[in-house]
Each structure stands twice: as C-alpha cells, then as structure tokens.
Length: 185
Image 1 (tube, rainbow, N blue to C red):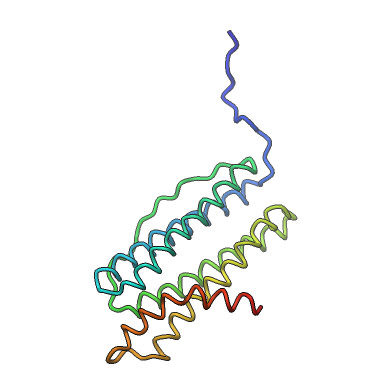
Image 2: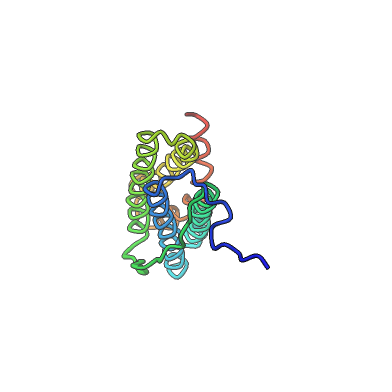
C-alpha cells in the first residue's frame, strides 16, 4: 500500500505569501462588513425602519458574497483563504443617520484597503491578482455612491416630522440610483 503524502493537491502557488496575507486581511474586512450591516439591519428593524432594514440585510449578504469571491480566488491561486474571526460589532445606534454615517465611513475604509491591495499587486507585477481586484475597485465606487447618497438624504429631506419615514422610503431606491450613476460614468 502506498503511503499518502500530506502535501497540498496542487503545491504550486501563484500568490506571494505577502499578497495572500493581504487578501486574507481583506477577507476579514468583508466579513466584518457583512456582520456590521447585519447588526445595523437588525437595529433598523427593531426601530421600525423596515425599508432601511431590508436594504441593510441585502447589503450584508452582498458583503458576504464579496468575502466568498476572495476565498475562491485565494484558494484557486494556490493560497489558503482563512475564515475571519469577527468581533467588536456595534449593535445599537443613536439614530438612523448614525447608521448611514457609519456605513459611509466604513465603505471609505474598505475602498482604501482595496486600493492598497491593487497598488501592492501592481508594484510586484502580480497582474492576475491586479486584474481580479478591478471588480472590487468598481464595486467600491458603487458602494461609496450608495452610502454617500444615503447620508445626503438626511440633509435634503430633514429628519423633522415625516422626514425619517421619507428617508427610510428613499433608502429603498438607492440601488436604482447607484445603477443610474454607474451607467452615466
């Protein structure tokens, strides 16, 4: 009987250890995004912001899909994607505006992280990973557009009277707004 080796099925890798580590760091960020938006969705739901809640539940799932996209890429390139440990998620918010202010701040941080990855890959001439990351570059432009528009709604509509109800309703139209903006670029 032949003794089986404990080596990987495909030991050849196209990712550097540094790139793999940076991609795994991005997995952590995407996992936290998913958890953070899930927490925000739950808070919105308990506060009666049904449309915002559904928007954030959908957004949470989208962020999870971003994480899985990175998982599959790392593994296909001979690396090892790691399940992130997600801690430190905020569960209560002072207002609906705080939810979307935090969303914008978080999306800007994700964009900065993606940009660092892209810059790294360009510098080391890992053009396959550079090319793979272009989808994330475009996606982050859309994510920031959505978050920025959500924050603008608070200033445009105002929070007085039926303002919060109207803002909640308008949040449901953000996906269409982002698609329209993307087509014009």
